[in-house]
Length: 320
Image (cartoon, rainbow, N blue to C red):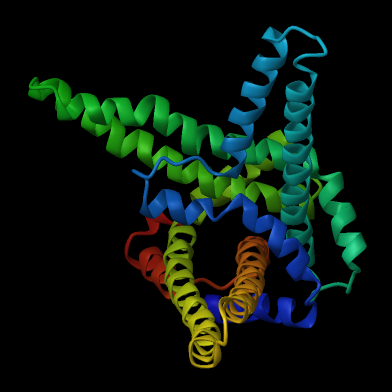
């Protein structure tokens, strides 16, 4: 079965190489954009990349209009420091995404070191950043600047003909476009890292791959959503089981406020550590899953999921 190979392989890659949690931690900064877009398109909150882009624009505008002088030098240095911090975080996040994609081949070829994976991620930083920017431009700014105004117009317009036309364009063209671009850029990252392709080549090939395998892609998104909900519910439950004993112990044994605060602080710190490790693990799993999906779809004699096989049998026009 298709998923019986992909998901266990992704779990095993992380268990065999716990050092990949380092990349998972930074890759988690990029978020899980595919799930957000396909299941909560109306939530137009900016992701990390779009937030960084807006911050950079604001910083550049402030620098361009600011007058250099000793009086405002501390503010300018602070802005420059923020720019450096955002830049470092972006480099680590995007490079970690590339490193995890490279690590997905560990079971197939060779076991490489943490430094080797990071080197690959850094070498592919610019095309990977370009794909993330495309995803951001379509997945956030496109929604904010085009889709949301159209939906607002539809809600406040009484011309039914215009409403029907705009609704058709919005819900059957624009929104599917946003969803498709999100998956295309995910596959494109694998083409960049694993096939050493340029940004235009990777985008073209990933578009072709998505068109031929869109059923599997969306099906995988649904499966990952179920896994995501179950995983984070389990993680939150685990954190509560860790923290509650500290709370009970601090309440029963506290002699003074200092002792109570110390015990509670220890419980909070331990809970934060568990949460960070849990998010790092899931982020690594998430990125490796998509890389393994890409590998399976490109492998000779590939197997397909049951839904894809049924669609191919009864509606072959929807599949390759």
